[in-house]
Length: 330
Image: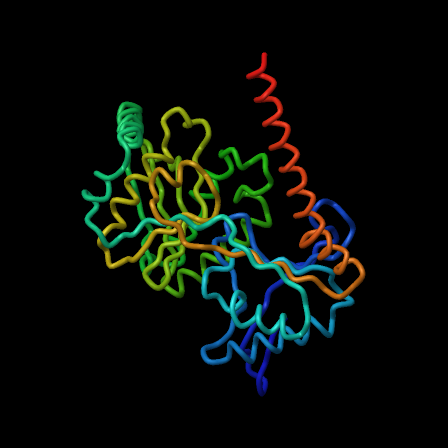
């Protein structure tokens, strides 16, 4: 959905509609247009127009609620328009909603000295990174290359994209349909990269072994924040842990360059918390239409399902207590 004022675009809400809702029941779900590597999303509005845009979109969703049953907006950061003004506008129009914290976005502050930060990491992590460095050094000549924001021309961007596409084609993601050599992901990453390069946001890291690229990380850098969007490595070199070594070298290079934070992306992956001590909150908001299916889903998710879980947990607790008593009596 787009919001215009006097012919000028002042807001956008990019959505996709799925024909199935959570659990596989038939329905119509609206969600943010996102990819598996998305870190954050929000209602888009020009400065000073957030209230106008949020209320306009709320009115339009209400007017068109025959076209949807549930709106699920994930990846909303704290203070986002979606969490504040848009959520309030939907509530004012009588639409039931549920806003809750989701898996956070772990990040590393980059304004401290690298040595102090790295010294605070666990002994286990440092041992693993040292082993990876030693394995790679024994395998051949190791080099880390960085296409930094604001550097290179379009030809160099294309060469780097060719390198990371080959890495992705030989990664474990090749069996998921999300590797960069597939037509859809390839078209998306090139279009995104060209725009990001023009704006000075594009940041791509590669690790080479004997001049062959075998690991990479794709980032966007904006407002002093580094968003790690995708990392891949050639699975035939898995025993050498090239991704781990690249990650360590890259982080060291990012420290004290005037950058604020390195964001690793939402998700409770164990490896992220070996590096990150802090987490940015991320919200998920669900809005239910007044359609029959929307009302039924709201009743199930907001009332019946939580009640069923409480009853289940109570029975489990009681059963555990009985089993403990029986064991003591035996």
